[in-house]
Length: 291
Image (cartoon, rainbow, N blue to C red; front, side, top):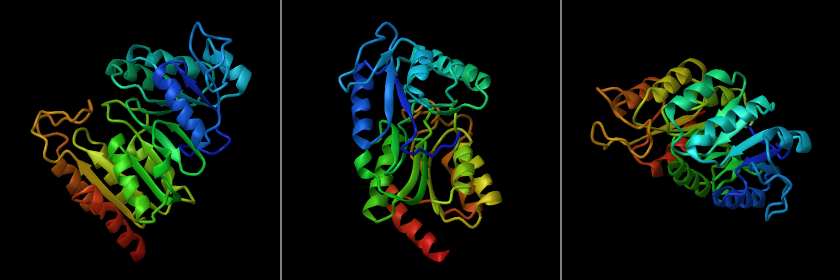
């Protein structure tokens, strides 16, 4: 399914009666997200504090509400089962907020859920400003516009978006893809969607050390998005070798996943790399003015 959300996206929350699920359900509702219910085994038939129906299974929830999108707030050990249950119930769009999901669990999920769009795990979710938000992003800092943003870091997303909004650069859709080694949706997946989106006229890519996703993104840009105004940022440039930055995927090993290789790849693709997040709005405005 497409990464883009609209007011018709019917969202259910897995783990809706837990403290985190309940809190962020309220925030999503306040933003205007169309949340139709939630799932917590053993609490079916109840209502949440927001007046939403609770179901014991995803199958029951989908049958009763017509839900199309899942947002997961469950403990790490249950995240894979939540994804499998949703897939078997016909859900093809899931946002997994949960941090600490075992890598082998995600390997199993990604390989056995063809056609399912999974954002995360260990991510802040995504938002199409002015339309809908799924996850934990602070909606008030976003502004509807034509800049697409993809980031491995949630907090970096908020810092960059705040700068873009203050500079008058609104966003089309912002996706926090997550910082784990195995994630359901990559930079390239999002870039492919943005390339075919009429609303998106420019893109910001916020990467970090570890893995090769940024190099893959740069290669895709060079081949398919040469005419698009794009700016990148790579976090963790001062991290000591062998140290992770809170994200399981943000670790350099044996010279692999270095910031130098990522910056070099972006520059080779004609994408300027900001020294600091605060430089991004100015760099992007210059790129957009040059088109």
